[in-house]
Length: 99
Image (cartoon, rainbow, N blue to C red; front, side, top):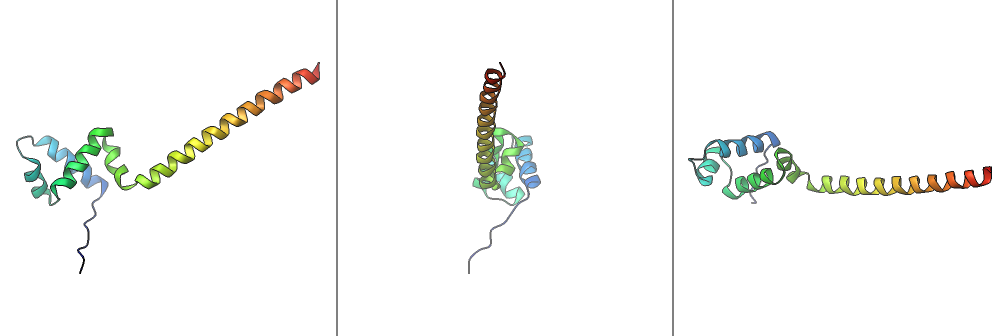
C-alpha cells in the first residue's frame, strides 16, 4: 500500500520558513523535526522563499497555473501591440484620404 503524501497550506509553509529564519541556533534537521516535515521539503520552501519572497512558496504548488497565466499575458501583450500597430496604420490612411 502506497504512502499518502502530506499536503501543507501556503500559510504553514510561510510560517515554517519564518520559524527556520527565527531560530538560527537550530539546524534545518531540528527545525524540520519540530515542524513534522522533511528536511528537503523545508529546504525547498526556504529556497523558494529566498528566490522571490513569500509568494514563491505558494507558487511552487501552482507552477502550471502560473505558467499558463504567463503565456496568456504574453499572448495578450502581442495582441495589444498588433492592435496598436493596426490603429496607427488606419490613422495614417485616414489622414492621407482626408486631405
